[in-house]
Amino acid sequence: MRKQGPVAAVDIAPAVPAALVTDYREALRILNDPRYPADPRGWQQRVGPECPALPTLGWRPDALRSSGEEHSRLRRAISAALDRVDQYGLDSTVAHITTTLINGFCEHGYADLLNDFAIPLVGQTLNWLLGLSAETGQAALDAIMVLRAATDSETVKAGNQQLITAMADAVMAKRLHPAADVTSWLIEPPAGLNDAEATYQLAMLYATGSQPTWNLIANMLRLMLTDDGFGGRLLYGALSVTDAIDEVLFTDPPLATMFPRFPQQMQILDTTMLPPHQPVLISVSACNTDPAVHSNDHLGNRSHLAWGAGIHACPARSLATVITTKSVTLLLDALTEIQLAVADGTGLQWLPGPFHRALTALPVTFSPCPPLELPLA
Image 1: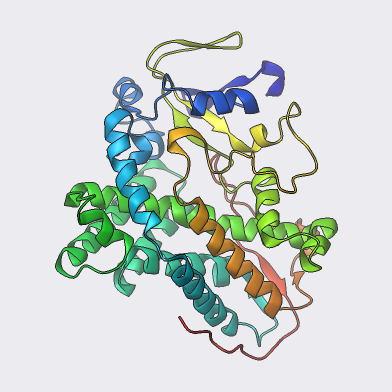
Image 2: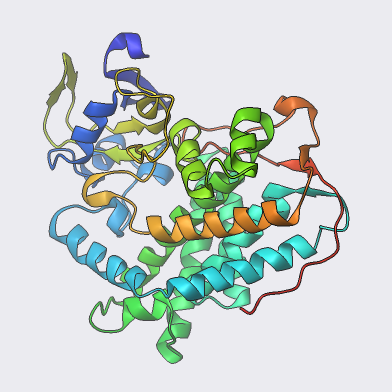
């Protein structure tokens, strides 16, 4: 695709054209350019309700798909709520959940570090952050698992609706019994979002905080187990877990393609004309490895686009980093002689689709060990 220039013509579904940006500098410019808004309604009116890409890229009343003052208002509410999260409490909660999960398989000598570890870890942590009950949290996780396995638009619609229903239940519960959690902070002053607004912001936070985070953890562990240089530096302290996260976000980001933008007027990118109201997608994987800016040394370099850029950049970056850093550190401290349970990584399977870089499982073996002492939650 690079031979086509900074942008390539692609189809994101049959007869649904889009432009895919593979050039780092152009991607950064687009993500900071108000002429490329995130609101897809102009495109949506043109493609009609039967468009198979609509459940994924269509408009929702949340900050991710809004522009202008509406985006600013919702973004302020979300950022203010996330800024109130107790980072020490988050660290302690992740430590308790991580240890509990490790204790569930540490004596067996084998585990699936995606399905037995990363997925339940992130799900339970999001329950704590958003203040979800066990029942509502399970309903939300079930919805994400439907979306994770979806191969058709109807299943995506069903998964989205399941998630919205779960978040609506959470908002209703917090109206009656507010607490120190993100859901309560979204509906109380000064944010004061109404029920529908809060429901959609929570659904967005859960969706963007779940799969990308557990895929980041799994992709990082996979790289450690398949790349001797990376794994050795990480295990022996030459590479911190925080720096290892950035290495993975450069080379194997959990969102391979994302950040759709919908120019309202024709734009010219290099020598390519971009029609109005046609999706422009950022290939994070391609941009991060753009030969014009790529370096093999990522130590201390956080210029990757895995968190996005501009006014729509991920507002929960620091929280995702805490979750990943703490959980991976404790896992590597607890388990020794970890090895893939499949030959040299070639037996690992990836979920299909252009957006997520996601394993189906990460089976490993290790030296069995006794359960760990649970830290205080």
